[in-house]
Length: 527
Image (cartoon, rainbow, N blue to C red; front, side, top):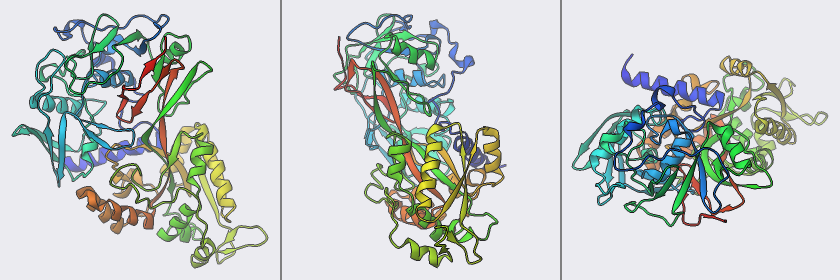
């Protein structure tokens, strides 16, 4: 099998698993550490800096930010697939770019990223230094990129890179196919070339290693911030220990795991940040029921169905405000589509009766539901996995919204995930509620290009062409959204919101999808 085809198959298969299992596609979120890679001898620590092993859990020192770490994992996100390591790495290592809380791109060690066809040029910023005073070189950026490509945490998102090299002091990348939003994948930490395999590489960010169990502000930080002078580290053995550590006062901040209900109490509080976790309605446009074909099997019908959904209500009632309406195929906060939303956040019923009539349906005054020309009621089967409280509530809300507009939604709750998966794979649904954590470059290609991730979707050459044009040129984003709205191969519902839980002594937390500690300027901890 050709290499490019093999990569595409792997990407489609990975997306299907993320879509069906609702696991975090980009990695690093809930993954367990790799025992083989986390057992790095302490002697590999950078000689210029002291080891920052975590202290056992005790009562947190008043007035200081205290975070949980697992000492055996180290601090190198290229060696282990762990949220805690990524969290600490965002303090210790500077990145090529950051993604702001408003989903905009902020250049850091990269001063520009040019995407032209399959070529990407990452122009690197000079005059930046590691914590030991040595300069950050282009060779360090290249070595870090290659380490990211080989890592469990970042490898999936960077799988489209076919070649990476240095040319005139810049990173020159060759991609398998154009990607106009590739710069959003460059939020990767930069380590020393000689230390990308060390558990405790020399810091390049706002903090460096201090005495045992603490991080201290770096005097050589390329982008310093007025954050705490010291950040304390406490030893934990997993996510549950973090949750309980905050409850007993041993820690005072943690990031809630993706897909998990954030545990809070009277002594804690929550802050939020936008993510690219998409909850959507999968549509079986290839079903055999002729009575449903006009609604589900045509772009006009799917667009009508989409208009009857109140996404804002779903976000507020079913996800308790931990989501925001999906107004297009691309996250609406991305600058390339901001203000171009092709999907309304609220329900739009204007002209719905005329649209149903044009599709061949008539409203039965007795039942209050639409019927096809043969008098068969318009009944749609909605499949939902019962393991998610949010999605069960969303299914109930969708049934109410559509029933009020004459569409009967019969919900099937699959408590056994294997049965849920089997029904989707075999097309035993009209609609199903799915979730996928998209890469930050908004790659929805596996939905549109055929294969396992596009179960039930009728492929459209027009939409695929618009998608490919957008991937090649960012200015085509609006045309792609228009084409998507006309076809609606699946129905985007809401984007998820990430949660940070902290004690009430902590204030001013500013997080983003690429950095739990995006800004430390307003962070304060009361004694």
